[in-house]
Image (cartoon, rainbow, N blue to C red; front, side, top):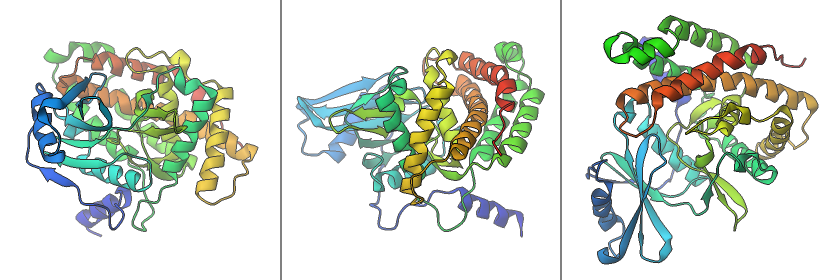
Length: 371
């Protein structure tokens, strides 16, 4: 088989396939300045909501994004129909597959897990605002919410969104891509003194990445449709309807089930000032994982009895893949440190993630899959 055919085959195996009959996404040739989002947003609203009185349109800028700029548009005193306008951050096409994001959005919406996608424009998307409250680090530990989150993740993981090929995980391809982008940074000594001083060397990072792929690939974690970025604020709780939904699908892909869960457990620490003492205890994890396995087996029509062996196996897989999550977001933050215009210490965040990887690695690697 030629190299090109192999590459195409691999793309098909990792690609998300949109259901036949899904609505076509509208496209507008409008560019929105990330430093003046409101002006561009108003042009888009004129196309999407021609009936809205321009004098009554209000906007709200959301300031907690670490990749993009986001503004909500609505008519005064009418919060039932809020249109979100998201402007892609500078150079984020290096770290986000935008075509894949749109496919994920469509697939998840078709399965009742995502809001409606209204349109794309030259440097962003518009979509429906999901009613509810974004969670924080305390919420994800709440016994009731914790189980709702576990069930919702199981629902996403059970979605069938491939074309008959056995899906392959996107993790190693993405991590290798991030590493190659990061590697160029190590060669520019002058402008990256902090990288040289605080981040492990290029050789160490590559060695660890290869070691991870060789060991983690053998753990037998199923490859499923994953969110891959389930931090607290990407989970919306609708108390009125009694459910949670996940938002922001930029990193969604086929991936290891255990990566998605381990990544979520890492996010218990928070984002702006991570505190890894908040990583869930074994007891809390087993509660979460039991709820998850029950729901996943139900959604995939495999009964709902959960054995101790299944539970302990998933516990070990999840904690080992949590290591890969630290590496993935460490690389991501190094790339963001160079290109992002968002006010956030990405380099400091990268150092935190790599430090946590090396700190937890010995204990995690001592865990063994039960026989």
